[in-house]
Amino acid sequence: MKHTVNVSIGGFSFVLEDDAYSQLSAYLNDIKIRLGNDRLAQETINDIEIRVTELLSEKVNTGQAVTLEIVDQIINQIGRPEDITDVSGENFKPKKPKRFYRDPDGSIIAGVCSGLATYFNVDSLVFRIIFLALIFANGLGILLYFILWIALPNAVTPFQKMEMMGEGMSFEEMGEKVKREYEEASERLKKSKTGNFIQKIFSLIGQILLYILKAAFIAVKAISILIGVILIIAMVLLFVAFVGATFFGTYLLNSSMGEIGLSLNQIVTSMLEISSSYWVTIPIFLLFAIPILALIYAGVRIIFRFKAKDALLGIIAAVIWVTSVVTLSLTIFYQARSLAVRENVKTTQTLRVSSKTKLLYLKSFNYPIDSINNRELLNIFDMKLVEINGAKRLVGIPTLSIKKSDDEYPSIEVVRQSRGINHITARYNAKAIDYGITYSDTIITFDPLYIMPQDTKWKNQKLTINLYLPEGYGVSLDSTMLDILGDNQPFSSYWPDEMIGKTWVMTYSGLRVKR
Image (cartoon, rainbow, N blue to C red; front, side):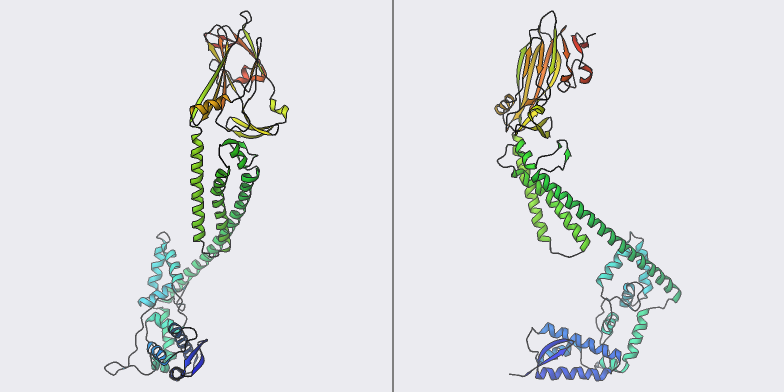
């Protein structure tokens, strides 16, 4: 078994077999002798050692000993110090493939134009003019410059600068003329053949653009941080309010349904026939909560500018959101079926009014729920959800219309309307509407509200009262009738507040006020 040696090359530790160590040491010492001891030669030697380290790391695993065969492969790949001759016996410098670099020596902003010019062996002014012209093509020049700025590495070491020019690396030539070669390379990279005046102009323009871009970057960064902070604060407040409105009944919305003082769970159970309110509550919550949380996360990313592998998290959130939409859609569809059919239930009462007076007195009484410790919880279109003696009840305000009749006596028709999944259910829901009218001689007293039985769900229940008056009969409208009297009276052009407190007589052409 061969002996091994632990050595440090380019700052990294390797295990070499004895013969491999001897071969590599001789190779590096030969290079040092040929290049000399000045600063530039030392930089070149350091580059060679780094390259040897890279190749060793590629060819051996951790803990594996480097063999003589591996060392020979690396030496052949980098090149031997001795002279390399062609078939004619003349020395030549092997060519390396050119590589794109940014040239810091001839740079005005980042060295992109100078690096491209060196690679294509043209003056850097050509590329500066091209990029300046592309700025006027919707800013394409700026975008392309930034892309190349990010994509191209900077030519810092002597080897990188020679790769940029495509020059060879004959060790004998480097040893004899290293100082002159690097001085000439530096001069060639400056590319100042077109004169100092134009170069200074572009240098000034470049510096101005650089300061403008730096200022723009600072402004954009400050604005983005401000947007992120505002976004996070707004979305956190909205999320807290939404959680409260959904599960705890805090005040959040002011919509067509009025100020909501109930939680979403309570609203759902008051309106929908469903086994569990969570079939609606949870999908609605996720439908809004996921975008809100996504905006909060976006605000955090804007402020702290961190990278995260969040693609899987985004996919999971999207799947949950779509599932919530589908679940909510199906629930709404099945609930809509329970409102598919509408039915009316009518009851009629003939009023035997004296032929001498021919006058009816219409009145209501004070809002009764105030006297039984009520609390209005929610407006649902034309109905209200109130609390009566600790129980939640749906109530509504009836609508009275005064119409002309050809009969001998006046009559009152009460029309109860409701919806259901079929005609039988719809009629049952309509009959369940609790409403009363009290008759006393010529005085008719109307309940101010129609009330649904406890635990009845909203089915768009409505109650309409039609008072039919023959010609010559009149009505006296008490002020308590203001809320009940309909806005669109078919035989009067007056508004309810103009009709109350007066006596009206039905004539051939409609209602006329009695003088």
